[in-house]
Length: 180
Image (cartoon, rainbow, N blue to C red; front, side):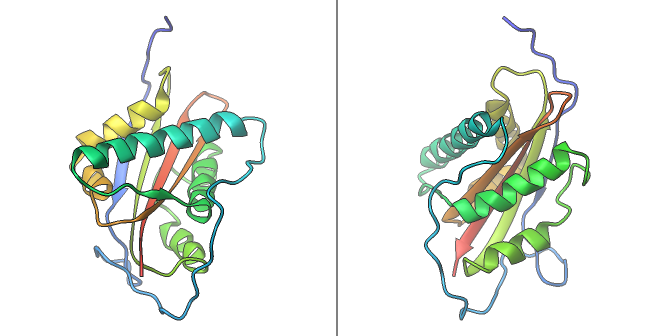
């Protein structure tokens, strides 16, 4: 069995965001933006797309199992939200942005073009050297109070994005949305 080696795990969270960049558990936008039906899955663009899609689905299932254990409704995986989460994970993996929530307001603005929402939150993680990197990310989130609050939050949609760099580091982004 491959020796599990964690070179670095950093998990951060952003519970909420307001247009003034202050902490807020809810966001408001104009209810006049129509909701569009978005397909449940997208076709990824790179050779690792099948691997990433499996990891994203696994994170989704693990999060919903956790929510079920807390008597919370499941989150619906949304392609438009996943696209934004995936772009952020790719940017972190490529070193275009630091491991952080940098660009969260822009991701939410892009999502709001298709999905009117009341609140949004985000969890990010990265790890290396695990046979189940997605499980390590979810377990790390569960152990962190702020991440757990996002996982247990009053949200109904989610999007998950995974990417990996040349060093074998996996980057995970999960965005949570409560529709208007």
